[in-house]
Length: 257
Ligand SMILES: [Zn+2]
Ligand SMILES: [Zn+2]
Image (cartoon, rainbow, N blue to C red; front, side):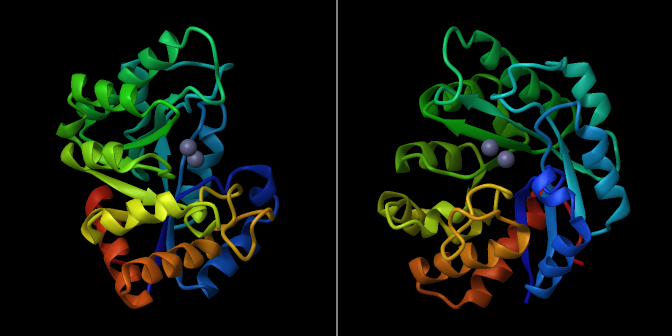
């Protein structure tokens, strides 16, 4: 069995400080690969270094919508940086009207640049959306994100948003939030999303699933997300592991390990 963590931040100090132990626990849990997602350009060299040193770690290039300081890259810059052989996606990018307030035209412009870069280099998108579902989908349509597809990561939106993303050829990725007691609406959404369009992730070091809720999250714990999904879908854990791993490899064009 293999499970893949489609979204983590193992370069962050909570995990990066003891990375070899984090990766050892990941392998023990049969988590065979993970995608280390960039949130800004300043930390990109560290993300790439981890991916270069570990065959099972992949990388992405992008600037998170919550990053109010630091460089907001041009389409050209993103395209150029994504040429690295371990970079399999553009992101995370998207819109977040929850954590950042005020005139957010800059956030929408940055999001458009990421989609344009992705369509230019033919790499899928990793999209973050919070309290901004309608605008996110509208921009994805306007910029023809369908041409490359991608994933709506750490999904917490409604079925309406999920359905629109699925129509654009995007996958839906569920995190440890799925295991939270209060997340009944989200479990209802997960019930409806076809298994062929689902990924699992930790978004570690944040959002540890039950029974580790509130603790530092790490890729090994993606197993609990997969187990919850198995319960929701009423299929064996092996089916979830196999299907979501296949989905991951198909989306990011990574040969089976
Ligand atoms: Zn995110
Ligand atoms: Zn993230």
